[in-house]
Length: 295
Ligand code: FPP
Ligand code: MG
View 1: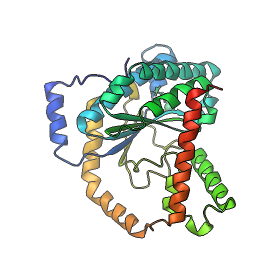
View 2: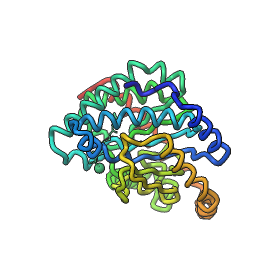
View 3: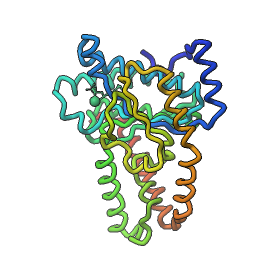
View 4: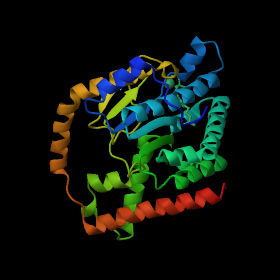
């Protein structure tokens, strides 16, 4: 299945979308797409079929997000912890990602038409070279798009992201690019893999598991969290609309917390700004290297 689909909402669903759009729409939604293997077991199909159905649901969900006016989506596609699953499952998930990223490149004109920017967040050094190259190409082709943003967490955990960020900042201090006095929450945020994204407004986890599984732990301190029992491949637009409705009910309270947070934010020094620009440029150059080499 393609990443970009045509909208296929029924009259009733379109009506519900219209109603929900009268309220506040979250600009950034993060998903933990859980329950693929349980779905496979329930339907007596191979485990990888559950992940394939999971990808199909992702494509559908992206279209619903566009329909709703949600500008940015971040999905947990492969955790560093997932490398500990059976070799057969890891290989199958990596093969699925290869197939889907190749497809994404083949249909990149659709991404360009829709102005979608793709970002991979994660420790790319853990991803096989050929897949990393496909991902880097997708990121480079779409880097100037700004209508919608799709961030795919792959070989990602928050603890790894935070550890890598600490290393980046420590190197900055060692090289005298910044001093310890420049280190604050803003500088830290700008050195994370997610540096170019606003924090998620809403995080949704399917399958009834009530935990974050090391996902965006720094970024979700003021997000509305919605846990639902539905297995990811079985989720429908109604589940998304319910989550958005709950977010809308809590929006005023969440905004109050954010205003308080902004009040304690400090504006960063010129030196800190130059450092975070350099971190960003180094990442871009690394990406360009990855796009031309699979080793
Ligand atoms: C969690 O369900 C899901 C995953 C570990 C993989 C998610 C991947 C996809 C939906 C495909 C996305 C692919 C691309 C290329 C972006 P689980 O395996 O933990 O299922 P369980 O909780 O029922 O055991
Ligand atoms: Mg699971």
